[in-house]
Length: 269
Ligand SMILES: NC(=O)c1ccc[n+]([C@@H]2O[C@H](COP(=O)([O-])OP(=O)(O)OC[C@H]3O[C@@H](n4cnc5c(N)ncnc54)[C@H](OP(=O)(O)O)[C@@H]3O)[C@@H](O)[C@H]2O)c1
Image 1 (cartoon, rainbow, N blue to C red):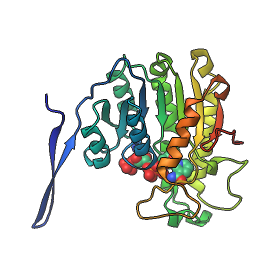
Image 2: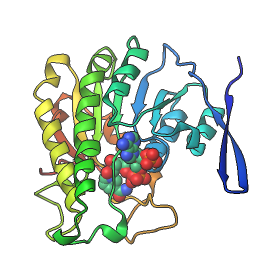
Image 3: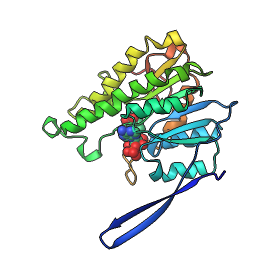
Image 4: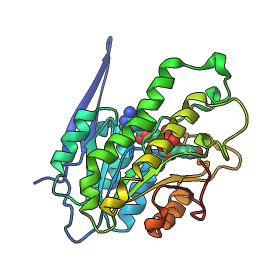
C-alpha cells in the first residue's frame, strides 16, 4: 500500500491554467503501545508546532485541518512519520465531528487538544465598537467557544478510555476579566474566549466523574502570522515546548483551571 496518494488540484482562470500535485497521507499506522493526541487546527501556527513536537516524542497523532489537501507543512511531517493521521475537520461541522468520533470509536485519546481558533487580524484588533464585524462576532463564538465544547463532549469517552485522560483547550488572556487588556480592542475574540472559558469551567464539574482532567491554557503572545514579528512575542517552538511541560504535569487538581504556558501558574478568569 503506498504511503500516500496523490491528488491533483487544478486552478483554471480564463486562459491561465496551473496544476499542483499535493500528497495526502492515508490512515496512519497508530501504534497500540503509544499514547495518542488529537489536535484541531493543526495545519499552521501553534497547532502545527504541537504536531511537530508530539511527533518528536513518538506519539500517535490525529491532526485535523479544514483543508488537508492544502496543508503542505503537515503533509511534509506525515511523509516522514508513520503515526500521523491527517483528518479533515471544520470544527463547526458537528456532523463531521460525530463521524470522526465514529471512525476512532475504539481509539483511546490521551490528550484532546482543542487548538483551532479564529484570531483577530492585527489591523482590526484595535477597532472600537463601531468597527465590530457582526458576522465575525457570531462566527467567533461558533468556532472559539461552541465548537470546543461540542468536541470535548463527543470525544469524552475516548479520553476517559485512555491512560492520561486530559482535555487541553487553548484559550487566551484576552478572554480574562482579571488580566485582559483594559481598553476597547478585539471585541469578538475576547468575548468568544471568555465564553470558551465559561463553557469549559462548567464542563469541569462533569469531568471528575470520568477521571478526566480538563484544563485551559494561555499560549502567551506568539508569532504565528507569517512575516510578522510582534514586539515581546515568542515563537511557536518556545510556546509549545513550555505548554507541553505544563501538560505533562497536569493532575486532577488542575481540572477546571486556566493556566499560563510559562510555568503553569493559575490565571484569573
Ligand atoms: N498566537 C497567539 O499569540 C495566541 C495568543 C493567545 C491564544 N491563541 C490561541 O491559540 C490557538 C492557535 O492560535 P494560532 O496563533 O496558531 O492561530 P492561527 O495561526 O491563526 O491558526 C489558527 C488555526 O485554527 C484553524 N481554524 C480556524 N477556524 C477553523 C474552523 N472553523 N475549523 C477548523 N479549524 C479552524 C486554522 O485553519 P485554517 O488554516 O484552515 O484557517 C488554523 O489551523 C487559537 O485558539 C488562538 O486563539 C493564540
